[in-house]
Figure 1 (cartoon, rainbow, N blue to C red):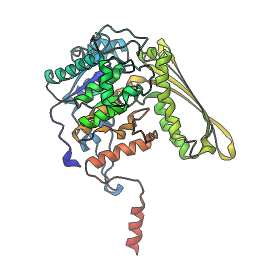
Figure 2: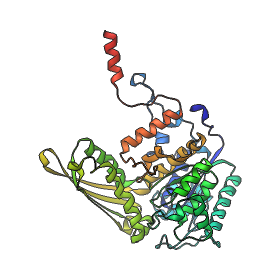
Figure 3: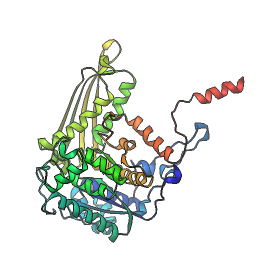
Figure 4: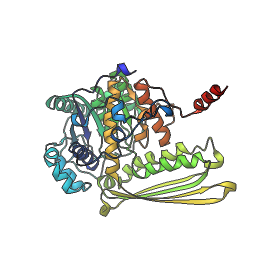
Length: 442
């Protein structure tokens, strides 16, 4: 498959709806790395190695040296936001990164100003937009976004563009008739259908242009039949949803270990506090439900009561998210896990995770941007399930259950890269080493 991958030549535009804490931390981080001020810790594309061939070959190149990814020096940033602050001002307000670091890259950050955003207050009740597009219909807004993307690409001399949604969590909605076909969806845009969310309008504009789109929030966005259909027609990679950070990251690390050891689980209670804009948005029950559904699905697909009813037949799983302004972007989560082992004897696990939400999300944005661009150049269209590693609620075909085990997700990602480059897939079976030894002895 290697010969089918187009080279990563020229500039790559990375556009983000929502230039808030996550997006500005990502942009500032990449600029700091480019100037040698910091390391891109947490980014697989920049820091991780991948094993190739047999263990005896000892081949472990960096992923960025193995697959043809865009260089950090070739990335151009842009985006849309409800507020007019440039990226430097927004980063200062987010209070994630130290001012001394931001000041060292101030000119680069100040140069990035948000385009006017598509916003519907009925989807994010706790925010008010001041830098917002107007149009007679949602279709008009989609056309404006298409113009924004094309103008950005032309004005910045970009050869390619990708879009990663870094905006707020929208209210909970489910798939309806307007989402079923692209014809119904486009008609709904022209008729201002209330069940077409702003994030869907961004996704439509991107996919219509063949621009890869990754959804970093739990919204119903590109995971609707209409946009999945359009993505196949336009040869566009899509993926989502909801960046896997914080508490859910810990769940997808710990839960597979419990399941692997055949330990039973009676209950898993999760509580969070955070004080950034995301926390403020989630303080509204309509938006919290969207996040809750995304987070609840993680355990349901790791602990399968239909397969192992004796161990996971009656798990009580509860999630709470509370807005707490003093914490800012510092998220704190508590998990109480009631498990049982041999002969049904009860045990408990307690986790207290104090993390910085945007610090964990920023490298995910980078990897999704680079891998989505790679997928486009490799001719991979539609749902990119191999990127499930980065999402709380991975997008799959309707007939497939998502894989939430982070270790299986990593194997899927790495084997996809090996497949792209014509390398042997690795199953970790290992019997061949010992069988070869036996044959030699005989």
